[in-house]
Length: 389
Image (cartoon, rainbow, N blue to C red; front, side):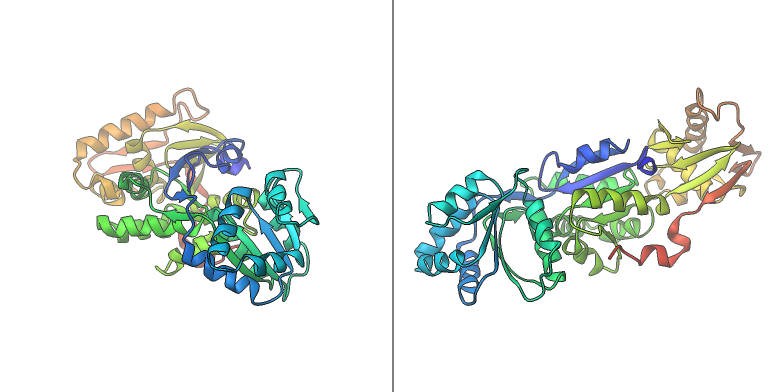
């Protein structure tokens, strides 16, 4: 997990602070929460009614109930459409898996008694329980309340199950477009190292806003090179794949697996050098020296990134500016000042006193006495096109 030290990771989800944040902070990463999806506990009656008809047309083997509140909304719509009795009859012959005691009590109010529940009150545990069993041909009905639940359902389908989703929440874009616009800006300016996309709506809303702002190509180009997209599941990956990207996908739609995927694949997309016997990693907002993260301002980082991509080669200020998409309107003096700040950033570090960034008179700058220890994966197509199974 030390591989994530100093990395800035945008957690794109339906929450202001996602559970993934705590896991990332434990790895010394810096998470940035982006609430790119608005989850509203107001089911679309037509969709729930259609799912109910699919539920009652054939026997059901497993039923996952995420909450008592959502279950009551489902039952109310079933009653309005004259399907309540048939639904209860189907549920009575299925294995009932309830997230918590409240959901279990709502099932008992229907006269159902054989109910399984988890001590952790976690829907994830219910899906993990089913995923560990042979699921080929089994019909599963799942009450869906979050984007993560949709990814769990897709994982069960990939295990051979037939899954009917009963969505008791809606997943909408945020009320304010500046949230998604900020996310696009973070990507284009390389101010994050990775995106952790937790559901399909997160990906769809990012791309939709980028299209509306006229920066879709810039976002896609950055995700193909400098910012690593890692998805909780295949549904979150599909909108990116439709635009020609091949994001990494966690082995299973669990937060720990998403962290493992970030830890395994993000280092392949970062710049690593060996300088004076020390390992130097370039991140979006920091440098990492032997797993010690040192914050660095955007300008100096942009210079370091351009030079570290071509160690030993002299780059003119114009070439440095061309390497940084957001530097098109700066002059040579701004590059000079960024170099000066970059040198000062290493004061008090193991690289203090090392002539890392050299000035070549009338030509430009170069990274000296450095050899590439681990190159970015842009040199290898295989690294970009092999997601986790």
